[in-house]
Image (cartoon, rainbow, N blue to C red; front, side):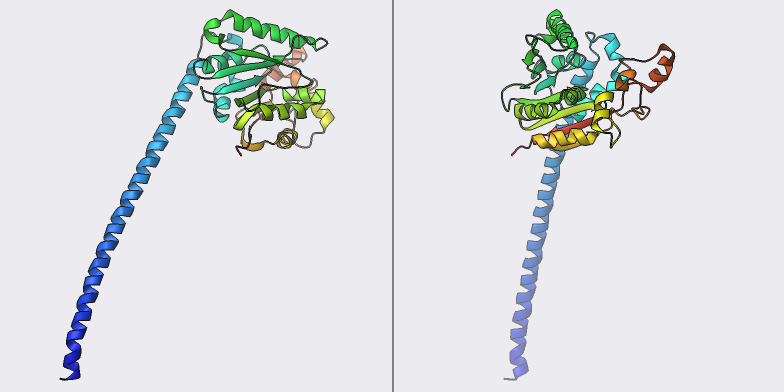
Length: 309
């Protein structure tokens, strides 16, 4: 037989085999592509569902906060300060949720208590951490503010009946059982601890009471970078660098920074420090218009996390 003739059937077989193989390969590729597309679509659907769910939760949380902020129980002169304190934006930045246990450090007469206690009343728990009244020799304002806060809570059970007032020793701060709080909040307090010389103790106590993964929400008057410590103590303004160091030394990690409470009109250079400005207004009557035009202080707004691990 001619070798060429003998090769032809073999070539034909090989060609048929390759064609069949290509057909099978093409079919497999198509099936794989379809499966991949289906998986991708499923993943996208899942992501969209999760995003929608998250958005619904966020919207529900925001709506609940809006309802509280519009509450008739809020003190009118304090509501007027929303323009400076930005409670909705601030609490949203701190990732506050209505089912959390939240410890507010020395809430004073209760500006944020009027918001936080009703917001957390149904599904969460609000704790007002206040100075221990039984300890004598403290500055008089501490006793006065505690009295005001307790009177406020006692007078309105409909909104504050589930609020807890928890005392602590300012010289040895302890805010509750270890790993028991979701969030610790402090507003315009830290300059006092720096002056007292035990700011480190406060930050360590915050770290102790928070659950792993918990949040420390921090707001205070902001000094210009490089301001020396004594100038900070005298003025009531703190540098972000100092605050971040206290937090880091206690074990926290910085989780976010916001300019929601910034005030570019505030030079931080005033005759009576931050107390020159509203709401303290420790200035000459003739200068009132000047300081009212500035408004309340420039403030840092920082979010720290206790590591989850």
